[in-house]
Image 1 (cartoon, helix red, strand yellow):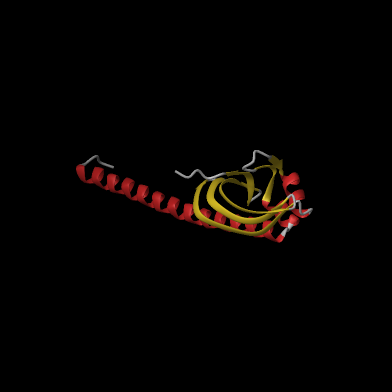
Image 2 (cartoon, rainbow, N blue to C red; image 1 turned 45 degrees about the vertical axis):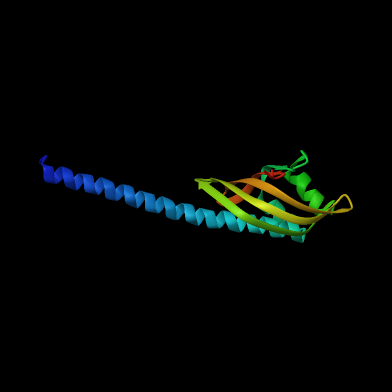
Length: 154
């Protein structure tokens, strides 16, 4: 191809078009991934309220770290055991203020967690900030890290 202004302009337009298309495809993939993570977060919430240990195990990575606002950190098996054995009963959980960022096979989900629970025989109402790290394992999103924090009011 001869190097002319016209050919250079066409090459520039093709490059710009490819960049726009790549950005649009990336945004579409992000939206799709965001929807998948939001569904996984909701499935996890529902399994906690239902006390569904089998579903919690299915949604959790074997290497999961579950951090509580009081500093307690549990493995996948330890957390699920507390739910199944009713050491911690989630009577209700509402999640809102979702912020999700998906990057390939990893995602960070943040939200506010309002819950009514029974913990060590005591009724508690909690409002916590939650950060979750999800990763795709064998084609399925699994909870890898969950950390709750007491929200700071200013």
